[in-house]
Image 1 (cartoon, rainbow, N blue to C red):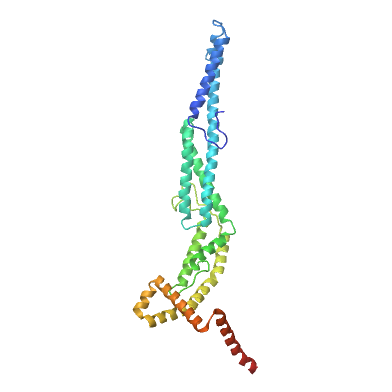
Image 2 (tube, rainbow, N blue to C red):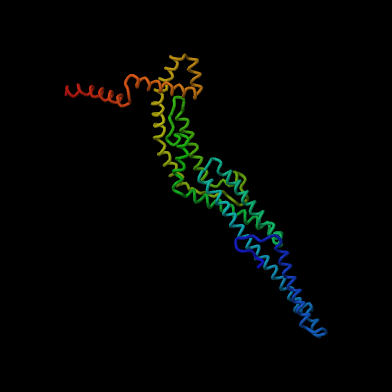
Length: 333
């Protein structure tokens, strides 16, 4: 009855409660002996001899108490071990999915935090039952190794997924193309962003290639960084990535060239209409430039509608003009 339910931690003062129960058992037994055995019975005193039943019973109860504390210690270690694995898993799943550049730094921090929380739960209970003094250092090493393996197992699983290739390309694409939503402008530098995108993508690959659970040169004695991606798979991932990004630079340069023409025309028009100083000020103030573009666009629409009429009439004019252009060609044929 004193042991907590599975996956639960005992209330404070477990040892005191165990000792209290053991003492009460002895008191009840001695009271029963006094009641049942007549005073002056010649063999009554023998019950309390060094090897007598009462002394043996006390020793047996002491053994039961030690065994109960050991059972509690094992049960608590199992519960806290599961909590540690669950805490690490919940934190790692988000870190590994995002794979931010500082992923390993955050993993180290979370490992330290989760391990510290686990030992903070475990130590007071084991001290209470008298197990921490003898086993504390061994238990610390055991739980540190558990956290170490839990992290590496999770990273190993993520590194083995086929989606890693997409994750690597997406890291490049976010920097280079902003997921194809980028409009390359006159002052952009596609080759520079292309190389930076490649660098970030290769850095992501390196994060999953081998463990960085400890900074370089600070690995504990006897431990070496495990490798999650072997040389063959790394080569396949790198070659596939290089092949996939080759069209991206050409796409960016073509996009920039297409935008540059309209950009130069706009800048030239601004300089002619406003003057150099005013045009330069306008280019340095995006909101004002946007307002001017919106105003010019609205004025253009109003102008066409004033002279042509409704949108339907404008469409009809364009259609008729195209038909006129096409008629001579048909007659000539």
